Image (cartoon, rainbow, N blue to C red):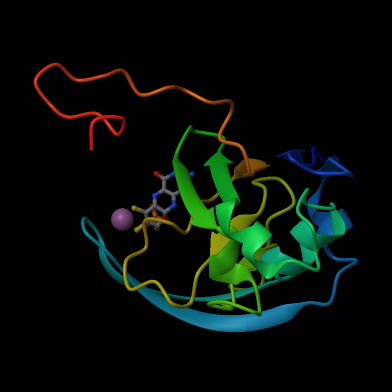
Length: 162
Ligand SMILES: Nc1nc2c(c(=O)[nH]1)N[C@H]1C(S)=C(S)[C@@H](COP(=O)(O)O)O[C@H]1N2
Ligand SMILES: [Mo]
């Protein structure tokens, strides 16, 4: 059987390639979710899997763990095999902030996701769109890929003028 691989990348001390069997090494949670899809209506599913926070913390995100404010600039970019892509903030899943119980689902309705790859599970979302299936990459980013200076807009006061 071909196992799907998920790449953890970005500002991480320990980037990793993980399969569903790898993700079974973390403590597993089970959750029932209902979400509404704009095109197919309400869906109900039972997901199991580790907490996204546990898996990403083990990869060593590049902030100072003792300084809570340092974590606030980190984003989590999740993309599926088909290019569907959504962002979370680190603070959204961090127990010191919003502490959302987001899972990396490795089973849906008692069917393992070994071949399809994990699915993002967000019990707090009313809409289904962020429940990205077939996750291939999760990028943790505290620097947004470099600094892009904002060009001065003619006719408007710049910060230096005000
Ligand atoms: N990879 C991927 N995941 C995705 C989507 C997608 O297009 N690609 N659609 C999202 C949307 S809009 C919904 S409502 C849920 C459930 O969609 P499904 O009914 O196609 O399973 O999956 C989400 N996850
Ligand atoms: Mo949807």
